[in-house]
Every structure is written in structure tokens, then in C-alpha cells.
Image (cartoon, rainbow, N blue to C red; front, side, top):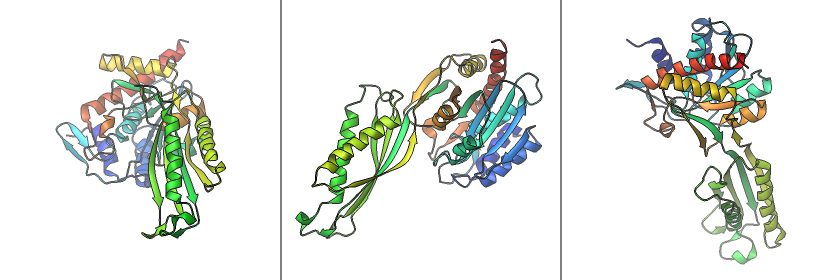
Length: 369
């Protein structure tokens, strides 16, 4: 017989919810949280975020996870102690654990206020989190739910600068290339200069502390016998915590400007697609200490503190609210977005215990201050 916790996660996985299509899942969570799980003040906002709370007073802890998944339906099934389905790892299991853990302390005294936010569009442009922050949220500490594995806590993410560069030149017949500039070739020269500049700033053997750049999209040319008169590229730059996105943006602008000063080159247009600052958690914060204690209590081992070369919503949450925040959740991140995406049931159930223990440990730590 399936227990409530496994059934709750299974139902979440059955509801297909790629970015910007979270409405059905949002309504399911609102209904469950308000009618079955003891939450109060539960609401769904205009971008399909679901927010509810239990408890009152201090400390005020925000448990934040995302409902959306990458596109691609994956049938939900249970087999050999695992639940498989799109979002099982990234990151519906973490969100379900947070909701269920908060529900289990709803009737306890002196645990403070726990706010659970299920946000939309994390796999897209973080529309949900941005709307949550625009509305304003009162919290002292936060945990963002992403797969780290039960024995790891993510304390650092690199920042991200995504740029679109566009080059336009007079288009001419391919038989007379001397009459104009090849937009594709010119823009690729700019890209090579950008890539070389950041390669010089690398730290040997430490990808987290190095700036990395990747050409993710290129579009140019109109016909097999016409020299390209327009080209656009998208560049993804990941930024370690010893830099700011503004520093990196200024570096790119300087490189582009150098090419523009050469009269043989055309002008370039630059569009900023994303600008997210790097973030590292305070390793002495009460929320990190509470999480370490909770994992020690439930797992019997001290967790590893890890840095990731990607960028997460923790970056925006931490830099905007200016509160201590860490990222944690069940699941193997290497299974995220794959055809084998799944979560071990035992790990999922244990994560609920850990989140519940975090709430109690944080209350004890802050009361003893």
C-alpha cells in the first residue's frame, strides 16, 4: 500500500508542468496544502507561484522550491524502490519534502514561521522567483530545494551573463566578397577574442574559480550564394564569486569596442539576456549549522559543502533578500533532465525527516543566541 508521502509526490509527477505550464500543479498544491496539510494563508499568484505558511513568530524560514520541469513528458512509474518521472530529481522531490516537512510541524509550538513557496519558471527565466521577490517576502533564512544528494549541501553557485551579439553588414553576391564584410566571419572573430580573454583568467584545475564562456547559438546567412549580411550569436559566461557580472560585461564591451574602432569592421549590437550575480553562502550562518546538525542526526555523517559551476535561484534569492541561504535536496543531480530521471523512495522519505529536523534545529539555535 502506498503511503501518503509517496502518493503525494507521485501525483505531483503525474501532472506535467514544464516552464510556463504550471497552473494545474499549482492548483493541486494549493488544494492539498490548504485542505489536507495544515497550511494557512495559501494563495496562487498571477505567475502560478504557490505560497503558504505554518507556525508564527521567529525565526522566519523560507523553504523555496520550483514546480516546473524541462520540456519532455516522462511516464510516472514506481519500480524497485524508485519513483521515475519528469521532475522526480529536478526538483519536485525536494519541493514535496519541504511541503510535507513543514506540514509535520504545523501544530508544534516555538518553531517559528515556516513559509513554503513553490515557484514557477525556474528552468526558464526565473519569472516565479522574480515575482515572489517583487511582491516582497519577510524571511530571516532560506533553503532552496535542488538535488544535491542527502550528504551534500550546495553553498556556492557561479554567476551568469548571457549575451546576444548581432552584426549587420551590406549583403552582396558571394562572387564579390571584397565589396562588403562577412557578418558571420566578423562576429566569430569577436567571439574568439572574448573566449581568449576569459581563458587567460582561468585558475588551473579549479573550474569553479575560473571564468568560462560558451557559444550556445549562432544564426547567419540567407542563401548559398549570398555573403552573410547578418549574424547573431548567443554567449553564455559563468562567473566565479571573485568577480561581478558588471566587471565581465565591461570586459566584453571593451573587446567589442576595440573591434568597432577598426574602420574595416561594422558596428555591433549587444543585448543582455541574463545577468545573475555569483553567490556563496555564509558558512557560519545559523541555517547552514542547522542543516549540518539535521543531516548528522538523520544520516549519522557530516555533509560535504560543495560549490557548483552552474547558476541557481539561490543566487537571486540570496543577493536580493540579503539573508543566509543554502541549497539542498534529495536526488542525484546527474539524473536531472534525463530519460532515467528518478528518486529513490528511501532517500525521498529521509529528506522529509531532514527538512523537519532543520526546522527544529534552527528554532533551537536562534533561541539560544
